[in-house]
Structures are given as structure tokens and as C-alpha cells.
Figure 1: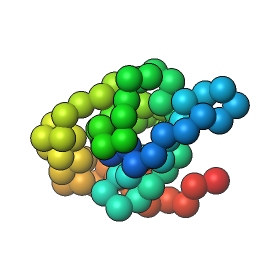
Figure 2: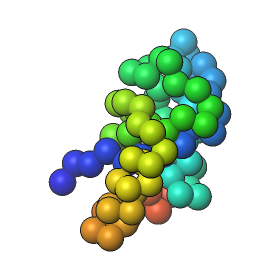
Figure 3: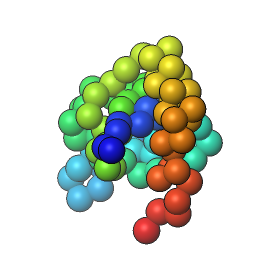
Figure 4: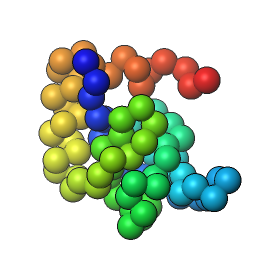
Length: 83
């Protein structure tokens, strides 16, 4: 099943002319492409699918989605080491 995971943007930067960021997923930080959400700011929450932020969401919605995914045991990919 393909899911988008909510995360909090901790940092934004440009890499090879792409908007990128460090996104925190409940204590696990991953590098994410932010090009689809150019208005995003540090502290915002985004929905991420396969390394791409697809949309921004508010903190309450992010918390609800994250808790639901955790109860469904759908967060194992986050715990896997990044390449």
C-alpha cells in the first residue's frame, strides 16, 4: 500500500536548483524534495510520499494521520536506514 506520511519541516535548502528539506517524522529525520510545495516554511507540516512532499497540512491533521499510521503498523519504512 502506498501512503503519504506527515512530517514537520525542520530545514529548507536548495540542492541542484531544487527546493529540498530536512523533515522530521516523529524523531526520524529524512531528506525530502519540497518542489511541489514551494510556499512551505520551517515549522510547517507536509505529507510525504516516496521522498516528495505533496501538500501541506495543519499540525492537528498531521498528528491524527501519524497516530493512525502508527496503529496500523505502517511506519516501518521510516525506521529503515536511508541510502
